[in-house]
Length: 185
Ligand SMILES: Cc1cc2nc3c(=O)[nH]c(=O)nc-3n(C[C@H](O)[C@H](O)[C@H](O)COP(=O)(O)O)c2cc1C
Image (cartoon, rainbow, N blue to C red; front, side, top):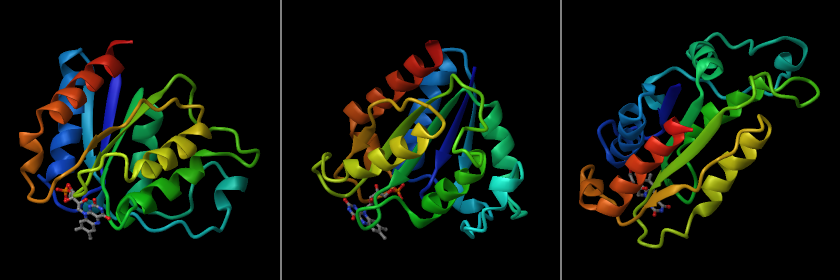
């Protein structure tokens, strides 16, 4: 069982990285092999809409996404973590998500093996954890092309300073338990 986490916050060591880290820690305790990718540290261009990937097996852009395609193919569980930026996922995370288009063939069939699972982790300043659930819906929409079911999101609000999340026991524990569950069955 391989669990692969993606952190879409440019602030390494911030709330999103910590909360994704909790999911990963739970998965590790359940026996999974784990890896976390910090998306903003990588060179990932935006999709050019050229559709090269619809007549070839992969994307023509030669950047860090090529290595991520391999990692995604090998993973059993994908964790997507992003802070809310102006009611959306971060731009870096969106560029990464758009590039997943290359994993869908010309008939909109997945180029990934079946049986994977996914989860979403959102962090935000707003105390209302229902304010930006549309972001989780966007990940579910993207994953539907791969027939990957997405667990109920972990959403933590009221966050500003990088370590604020450590005071939110409910989110921290919920993320850990989610990781355990995802890696257990
Ligand atoms: C550019 C920017 C835009 C933001 N927009 C929102 C927003 O629309 N709604 C919100 O609730 N929080 C917003 N926030 C707050 C962050 O989502 C929140 O502090 C988050 O926990 C930061 O995650 P990090 O510690 O991983 O960087 C914004 C923060 C930044 C820097």
